[in-house]
Image (cartoon, rainbow, N blue to C red):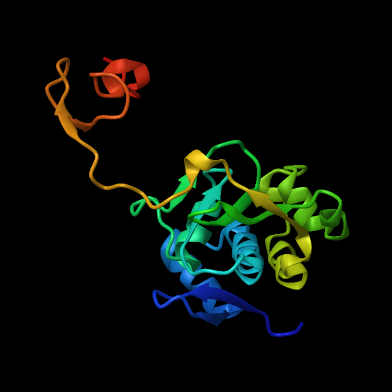
Length: 201
């Protein structure tokens, strides 16, 4: 197997690379395990970075909450905390990197036709076999061999409301229902008191 590298973007906007073994070590330290989805995610981010339209300032979208947000945060400056990464949980294994101002970018996704060439990856992806019946080492080997060959890419333009540098100056108000401070977006109550509360009373 050839030595694979995975691109990362530094704070200076310049590209450098991890070897695949270095990336696996970082994944294990950050994520807690060598998650197959996060390993594939590294190749997806790498492909997107190499095809991103000019300009160092970009945002990211992960279309699933599983694994891909971690790959984006490990390999780009885009994080959930700085607001440059949006997780839109469509349950699709896809990412998009796009230029902040005009919204032009690339979307990379698992190609269900290409994955057929890698049976252990296909069975893992489609959950054909229970985890205990999967050949984990073969799965990792096939991911390493296939790399970005599991994916396809297309140019996209992101909706205007998702572009532009993020304003950090949103007004803060006190919710009349719970008494806690929140950023005003819509309405006079915080999102939790407006019906988005995840907790059981």
